[in-house]
Length: 212
Ligand code: FDM
Image (cartoon, rainbow, N blue to C red; front, side):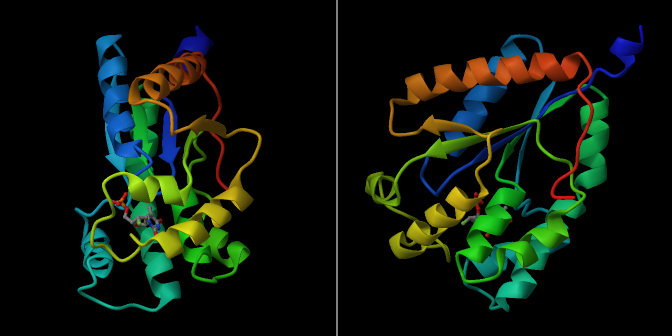
């Protein structure tokens, strides 16, 4: 049927502050979806494996210095270089669970004082996620969880500004999940929301694009 040919994978994004538990929850979702017979891949941004990704990685490790605008555009370019692969994966029926996306791009750069609209502009035209899951935790509580690493943004004062920026990006389509609950509780909640989205995309939900 025509319905079947529009069937596709879901683009699902997890966002949140450092140490909110995103990365662990991404891998739990992957096992869950694989276990229920769905084609699924785990992605993350920045993707440090590309040429652009290596520049980003050395910046994050404080091995290089870049103007705030320049690094913002590199993060965005890193998504653009994956855009066509992303679309073909989704069209072929593979669901993508992505650890950070354009929302991190805007939240982190605008936390440095860059204009929000300027930050959004290079992201316009990327595929819009079918679902954004925000793992909500205060920067103070996140900091208590075993401390931050040594990377550039892993400092409480900066994370507080990022939390503020994320708040200005929320819209009604985001699912805000209380990330201070137990790992198991969070996992259960995410599974339900994610499965609903995967099934909707399987029925042939049209693609939309970010910020246009
Ligand atoms: N980050 C991530 C950005 O500043 N902009 C972006 O577009 C993205 C995707 O990079 F501090 C920041 C967020 C985080 C850092 O992320 C590296 P991981 O999740 O720790 O690899």
